[in-house]
Every structure is written in structure tokens, then in C-alpha cells.
Amino acid sequence: MLTTFNRIRWIRLVAGAVALYQGIVSYSTILGAMGVLLLIQGIFNMGCPGLSCSQPYRQTNASNAEEIKFEEIK
Image (cartoon, rainbow, N blue to C red):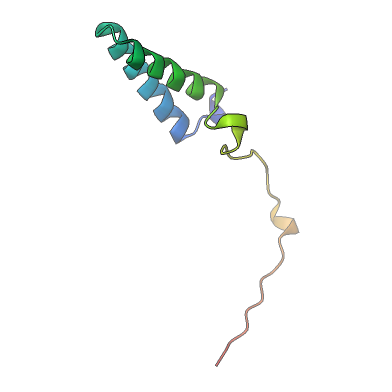
């Protein structure tokens, strides 16, 4: 489960937990709502609407890679 957690996801989780805690301690509804939003984004890996900015999980095969040919220009 934790293999798909990247650095940004951990930052969202920590920031959300801190914001939620501060919102509860200071009785701030807006800060608490922002904390909940960041926690939801971190838990479910939702960064943008429709997951448009998340990186796709795909594997690349090195055997399919083509060799790049360079030409010297004088």
C-alpha cells in the first residue's frame, strides 16, 4: 500500500494533519476544512480535478528503446 506514496503525497498528508490539528485547537473552521481537504488529497492521491496532474503508473521496457543517432554539424 505504501509503495505508491511519493514525496508530494507525504507532504499533503503531513500538512493536512497539521492544519486539521491547528484548526481544532484554535476553533478555526476554515483551517480545519483546509486540513480535511489536504488529508483527503493525500489519502486518495487526488491532486487535481479528474486526476489530470497525477503521474501515470506505467512500466517502460528498455528492450523497446531505439538507439539515438547524432550527426556532427560543422
